[in-house]
Length: 148
Image 1 (cartoon, rainbow, N blue to C red):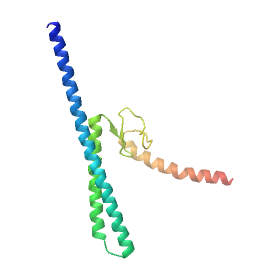
Image 2: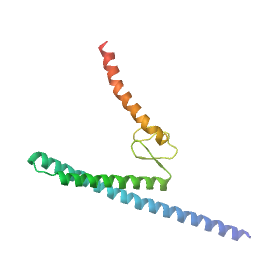
Image 3: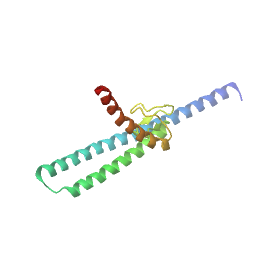
Image 4: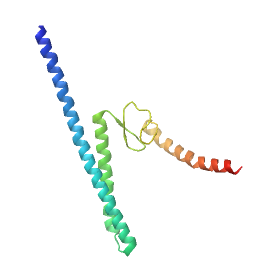
């Protein structure tokens, strides 16, 4: 293989790699656009739920069926958002925080949004309950410390 053949071979490899990366960026962009649309739909569904609840409390109208339908829609949107977030994270090489479901860099030890330690998922449930107990215990200790 001559010098020019090597140059052409390397140039072709670089062009292919750039083309693949551009395709990945495009796909992630499409996923993020879908995510933004789902979040907009979720905001509308929360607004509708609020209006129905307000109307029910204010006028006494029976909106139970409509509220149940709204709750079902919100649950479906939340599942779709969670799945899409996981898909985006996988495409970008990130991971999902088991505590707040935020995308986190793969090498992060702590979540930048909620501050939770990025443990394996089985350890997440006990950590949550331990955090709750600590949170409840701290104010009582400080209050009792002030009274002394």
